[in-house]
Length: 269
Image (cartoon, rainbow, N blue to C red):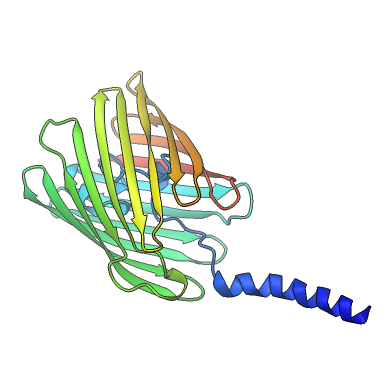
């Protein structure tokens, strides 16, 4: 009886310890920005938004002016809330700075991005990022490519995330993405992204953006993880004026199928 009891106790501790050895860290932050999260992580071919350069730095140069955004992200279960802001300048030198911080653990992500046109409507972008957790810190580079011919409703974006080596808790974060967007009407925009990562996993995400009454925005999106055939859903609402916008987003998390909520305020100057 004592032997059986010890076996049960040993089995319990093995179940507790072994997963922590192979999965030492569960990411709290998702450095995509709230607008992309409300569309299942898609947006590599989108440029209108103060934080789409987090997905594709080459989109930074496509929209003139100065933009600022602040956001707050939280989940109803198991995930700690985090907040962030983005500042984007494109009047003189294209430049963007974004900072994201998990409120309780102090995990943080900082990126600085720039971009330039190489041909009319064709741009290249680079981001330097610093991702810090309690276990490790990773400096890395992201590259992006963006095509949007003048007055065209169609755009294409391609990205390469984490070009430099990734080790420890960041291992497996390198990925390559391709996105397309099409403005079917002034009030209806379509988008689709596909992503392949170094774990040999494929993901597809996309959705639609509806503009109602010139100021009310409705977003509907979904994502498909081809590796385990999982579907995730997302959506959001927005109010946009000439100089300010307020957004609410809702996206499904893969780990526990819980819902991730995002609140976002954007300003245009």
